[in-house]
Image (tube, rainbow, N blue to C red):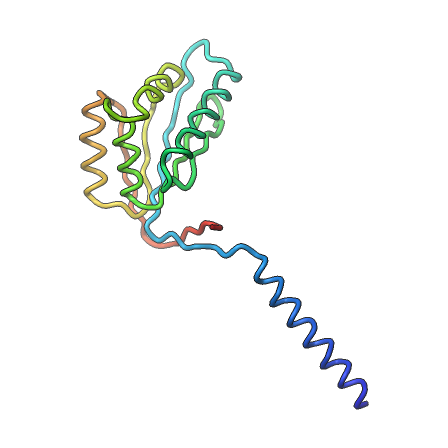
Length: 165
């Protein structure tokens, strides 16, 4: 019986050690309490091929990834006849950087114009931890750019967002 207990103790210690070592290999998730997520509903303009859409959206997403470090995600999704662009930001300041970048003097203004040749924006829906500061900044930017589509704002009630970095 004593040998059995010793073996069981050794096995238990081994399993706990292995589990602890494995836990260090799993990427830790970082909470993002102030995340802002934007859904842009896009209508594909006439005579635009799926290949053109795929090529352009890949290039656009790569540009954002390289130039906006607090952009957590930028992805385009087919939704029937429409395309949904999902933008994820660390916080409202990161979303404001995007608004500055698409403005007439911004580094992404030309790309935005190219995107508007491919898509017509139906609406922009903003979700998350934003304040009046973002709402006002977006209104000023939309006016500068002559945007006529609606912006909808949906503040967070509760929840969480994680990123594996």
